Length: 218
Image (cartoon, rainbow, N blue to C red; front, side, top):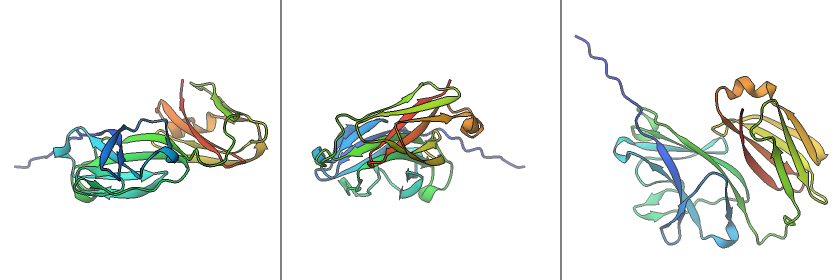
């Protein structure tokens, strides 16, 4: 007599929570597309919220394609914690894609649950950077075969862009001579994007300013 045991994936990361690591309180949900200003924030961390904590044994954090933390007990905080005392996770100015993936056992073992990916920007308004006149757009959105990037600024130009899939993995990076408009042929990416309905494009100017766009697919 043999018995097949089938472990079901019935748990997931539902959202992310921004934490004040100095006062150990929640600052609210961290939504995709958020802009965090270091000038107005305390030391922070980010927690992954799960829908069924009893089924989750560990959570993996991946930040910009790199595993940065494994948490084996709730609360699953990016910077770690000692009880309700959260440790800060330092973030520099830039664009980030954050993924959290839950597992049923410690150290990312057992059954893998459904992860969640968001992107967000970190800025510091104390820096003396001219951003008032910088307009950067990506269109059309949704896109079919060609994506256009346009930057309207007196001096800044597009110098780099990257195409990332729906979980933030970089598919291609391209450095270009600084220019105000870039056209991207999306046909080479269709098979690699699979059936995903969304992907991301990161754009960096020759002045070092970065922005990441979520792009829908038709």
